[in-house]
Length: 87
Image (tube, rainbow, N blue to C red; front, side, top):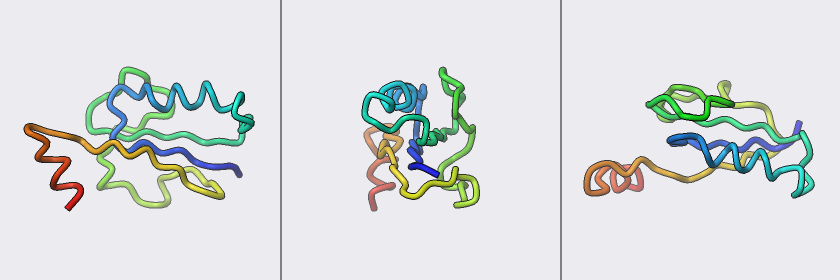
């Protein structure tokens, strides 16, 4: 298996769609797996799971030799959620 790109607060899921589109030009071919998680439905449903990242277990992730995580914490009002996440 190839790498797995995970976005754990994917919002509309545009980041994963962009990465998947550009992967072949970067030499990754079709070996990369993608999965995006969020607590609100994403506009782009491909590779999307409606679930809080805090409830995800390793068995829910695609297999991969390496894992690439897209860091995009939920910000919340006045960045409170992002600050709590970082702590």
